[in-house]
Image (cartoon, rainbow over all chains, first blue to last red; front, side, top):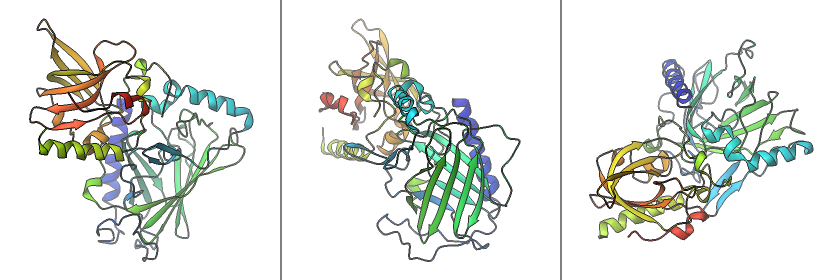
Length: 276
Length: 140
């Protein structure tokens, strides 16, 4: 697993460097002001734009709950409180005949959840990116988790130059992403998934037929991230996740961090399968 | 514990209580069931990894022989935010650590409940999961 993460981290650095150098249309100083609190982030403020006219998504984004930003599994957990986790309001709509399997997987999460042993969480379990690097022809989504359920750095390159999905790529945990703009919303279409990942800690499996659509809409200083997951093999209907509000974050203390490797060592010492 | 240490412990306690009370497995699934054990020794190795940081502590037994303990703690992100950086735990440091032993009987494997450094800095790292409630309390 350490090998995989190192490869991902190298990919993240390379993508960041290559795309950063091509940020020809990023407006200067658009996001240099101090990060607003969640309660003060404005949607009435003019939306910063790139020179091509599209909303500027560049920057580090926070939920406003900084203790929660690096935990991960945000489709599963809406937020945490002192008494524990508040689970997703909209769980995946599994076919009735598959609910027993979901329950069984959940009961054995500590031995069967690929993420438990540091396998990449993949899309859409990665949730919203912690950082976005945008150019005129591509968007790079960067992920940084070190504090709860997901651990590591990941990067996704999303072409926005009008190209179609690749036909020659192997199935993967991240799938194949292509983006396009619908008005002021960046729509990222993802297919070509392997089925080794879960969608959340509660035994939420999927098939290779999964298709994911992510929507990024920036209005003022608020970015709305919304995910819809289709999988006709396991769902009765598309799983439409609740929209998630993000705000721009320029606090240096929250800078993107290269995380240590994920090496699971205590599974063999667990005496029960309880998970939080 | 002097005023400075009280402040430090209070700060860390506040940070931990605000942190998500979640982990990739239940605390009680691995640790507990026996009284806390306080160990004084020298850090011999550090695994600064996720999902858990491991501190290896050389402790002298009754015969004067050094016994190595494997001590597990929170993820790197939480420790770092709490003020326990990687540098803080580098090998060679003398520390006093209160621990909760593994339930499966693995010898010298335990969870770090709190840690006191030679410079007097003290960090409370009790689990916030219900299974650890019986083991919370002040250091020895």
